[in-house]
Length: 101
Image (cartoon, rainbow, N blue to C red; front, side, top):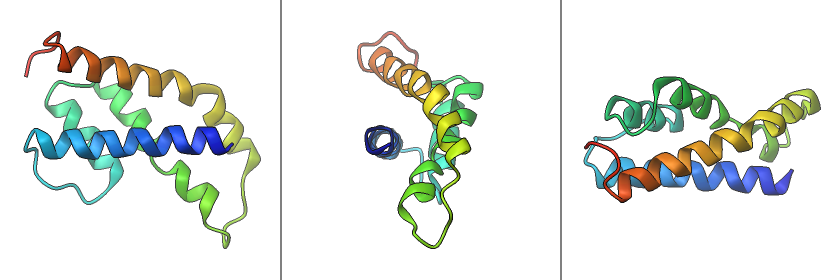
């Protein structure tokens, strides 16, 4: 679970960094950062929405006052890594000019 948490957190950090580098303005939530990248054409909207939902995962794990829902963790662990890889591919395409800006 720690590796999944770390992967999600790195993805969030990358989204926030790219948002700033592209001058997309401020976002009040991690979810909004992914959605802003979609409006710029870096991510498709469906992927942005899945990543926006995934952005809540670190909060599920680190806050001890909440009960950990292992079914939800399993669901994220089953589908989340594919979305994280898709996000990295999209950033790579943008970085190498394979994506319109």
